[in-house]
Image 1 (spheres, rainbow, N blue to C red):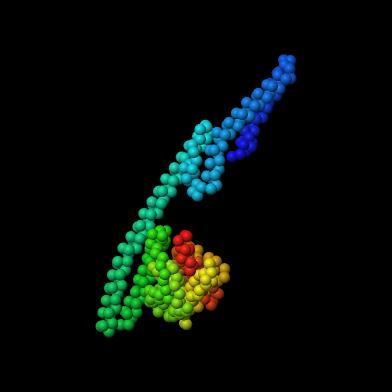
Image 2: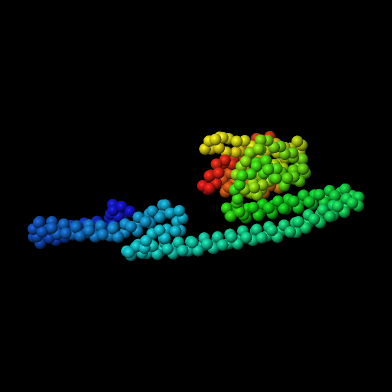
Length: 355
């Protein structure tokens, strides 16, 4: 806070002082006081007023400067009272007290909400683990039922129904897995281990984990140029690739469906050296108007509203997790020809330590 800014704020007091000095000059003139005495009196009054103004500004300058600095530069505004020294003048004490009360109330609310979110996340993770047990039991009973029907040369319709039920159970399992990764995405840094992994191995693991829906939809995987090493967490990457595979399966064409995984090294030897993995299918694609929003939470687009049972969560989670892991992600599509998602892995290991 500059002195002139403070003077502008005290303008009304200055005007009153000038009016009082004018009135004093008039009284002294009427009483026949010499002009030299009148000028001396004016000088003393003005000097006393300026000195008072200067002292008041010096007392307030530190508090207001800290307050202005805190309001503009402090990383979290709720910490502002910790960055400002308590003032020693009346209006400053009132301001500081009000800020402290507001800050305490806001911090208490933030802490309460954080506890609620943490409790909810813990509940979701517990629920996911508990829900997996009956699902595993259902899978086992279904296998036994299928074996019994097959061994007894039962009707093919029963086998088909058992397979359909197995498919639905796997779909439920996939949604449970989504919920688990969504809950953990808030604290990814606690469960994230960067290591060098073969891109081919990561893709192969994801394909194997999603083999059943790919076979059911007659989708063939194609792998190209995957003999590259990327630095990432294999568990989280398997989930990300699984979401991309499931998305491709959901919108696969009836015949000749393909999901292609292709890698390439860009900027080799340079500061921007990176590895790109593109997951491309030849499904229905995405309309141009929908493309900028495919990673938005809950966005299903025109295709998702056409009976595909889309939740709009899969690609949202892909973007969310990639952002947290420092992996670039982008989408490209031509309607009627296919959809592609490109993941960009920085080759410079220091990138991960800087995050």
